[in-house]
Structures are given as structure tokens and as C-alpha cells.
Length: 290
Length: 162
Image (cartoon, rainbow over all chains, first blue to last red):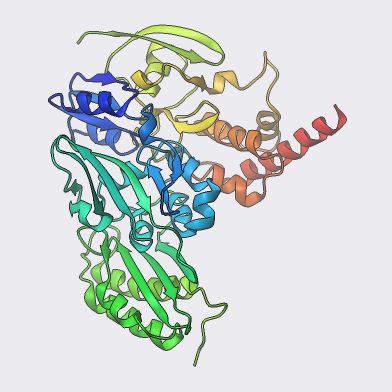
């Protein structure tokens, strides 16, 4: 690591000014960045510590009854926040899967997103719940759907001088359910070989009115499974429908082979996990087998 | 490279030292403050040998910069025993074979101590989850888990009897 400075702004204005310096980088939880700096995979001249910026901390209800999550809030605090475990349980589950307790006490949602690993556990549930990212930059504020933030492995679409401020979740839909499931070789402290989040919202007729399926580690970025979603829309939430969606998810994915698994293994996992995610996301009391 | 002055709270005391700006908290504790009870196992947050408590929460010291330390209460293994009296968890680990080479032990003690401070009645699953970020190559974890359950029971017994 080269010589490195450190700043601890306490307001968003000061944080943006600090980040405008050449070679300035965000330091949130540091659980990815510090390792990367020490291994020379990323460089920084100044670390701008965002953990003391009011606007980036905590959880607050939004005007439409949804939730705004500060980008620098720690995963463990978020997982234990009742507003998240009650309203967005699949997100709480995923936050409790990142690394270990030690990691979760530091890691942030903003970091899990902006580190942009294809296997980021918090991202599929955020996609499933329809999250939007609020970003601040030189030209003011903008929001984008979370899907739009990912460019490539390790790269986001944030421009120079832009900062992810908050993640906004819409209010929980009535008659909806979500679930996140992943495969790891070990029970804990591991990176997803494949992860699947599913969200289903049923209409008054009991049919699937809306559905989202999001995948980790089967593409260069976390991604939505459009084919699976199309197979779910308007259908009854039963085994036949879920089987069709599972086939569509597998057909639409082209995972790679790497040290964690072959492409064939990932495709097989994708089938099993998509099915499980849908079964557990189903807000009906039981999945019909007719 | 110019040194920087760091002031932080460690084991209830205010400590001051000169550090390299690139130091992690682990470097600060071991090299600058000579508190060598915290061990370096992997330097990338995987093994948990460097676990310390920051404001009561278990954290890998290798994943914090020294420059992040000011303003927080840091507890290392040296700060767990109370004026020479071992914590019930430490006594239980010794009594029940929860330590062999001892390298993982400081980190595991801190992870478990953090859990016991949070939950008076941890289940076995709670304990295994709390130490999931601490690798032990010697014991196979069984005796550590048993020691933690017994320590929790004993601590409740002490609390009940005053």
C-alpha cells in the first residue's frame, strides 16, 4: 500500500468535497477495500471514512411508506432492525449471510453494492424488492433502479464524484412474499456459488400479479431472470408454474466455470435454488401441487 | 514515510502511539502498542484470529485501519480477564479442552464473550454462528462450544445468586 491519508467528514457536503480530491476513495466497512489495498488490487491516496456522516447512517421511513436505508449503515444493525426483518425479510436473511459476525459488524449495504461482486448477497433481495439507489454528485441528486448500478465485475456505473447515499425500498405489497437462498460449500463464511431471490405478489384472484427473480453469481453482475419472471406473470402460484419458471431461469443463464464451481454445476444449482426460492416466497399458505 | 499520532482507547485505557498511516488496527495493537495477544492469521478477514471488540462488537482487526480507531472502545484478549480473574468463558475453555495450540483462542474468546454479553441464554446454534468467523485447526470446535454453553450457564447461576 502507498502512503495513505484519512479523513472523517461528518456531513454529506464535507464528504463530497473530500471525495473530490484526487485519489480519494470511500471507506465504509472496509471489509473488501482494506484487503484490496493491501493486495494492490485497488489504490487510494486518501480514505474518506463515511461512517460518521449522518445522512448515510440508519434507516428511515420514506414518504410512500417504504424504507430508506443509509448506504453506510452496518449490515448487522440492519439485519436486526425490525422494520427490515418484518417488511423485507429476504434482505435481513441475506445481510446475515455476508461473511461472518465480524464482517457483518462492519460491512455496509453501500459497500456490498458498490464493490459490485457478481456474488453480492444483499443485491438479489434488493432487486427482488424493487430497490432504487439514491446517488449524489456534482450535478445534484439522481435515483436509479438497483439493476442499473452494475456495469461489470467490480465496477459500477457511478461517475467520478458520485456517491451512493441511500437505498430506497417501496412499501411491502399486500399478499406478497420473498425469499433468498444461496449455495455455499461451507455453512458460513463463504461466497455464494449461486444465489437466488424471488418475490411474488398475488392478486385478489390468487394469481401471481407481479414477480421478480434475481440471481447472484451466474452472470458478470447480479441480474434479473426475465424469462422466469415472464413464466410467472398471471399464473397460479403452484408447482407447475414454479417448474416452468425454474426451466426458464436455467435456460436464460450462462454461468461461467471458476474455482467455486463449473458452469454445469451452477446451472444445476440454479434450478434447485430457483424452485426453493419460489416455494418459500409464495405468500399462499401452501403451494398447490395441482 | 511520515508517522502519524494515534490516540485510542484500548482495554479501558487511553493509549497514544506513533503509527504508519498504512497500519491496520492489527498492526497498531501488535507492533505499536505491543499487545501481542491478538494474532495475525490471514490478514484478509477469513480466519478470525485477529478478532477484537470495537464498542463491544466483534471485528477483525486486520479489516480496520489504525486511523479508524480513535473515538472507539477497543477490547483485546488482554482486557478480558478482570484484574487477573479469568472470565468464566476462559475458565471453561481451559477446563474443557477448548484450547490446544492456542492460536485461535484469543479471537474465539472475544467472539464468544461478545455473544454472552448480548445473550444470557445462547443456544448451541447461536454459539456456532458467533464463532463461525473463527477458524480452529486443532480442537474441532466441540469443546469450545461446550465450554461456551457451560460458561453461559455459570454466568446465569452467578447472576441468580448475586
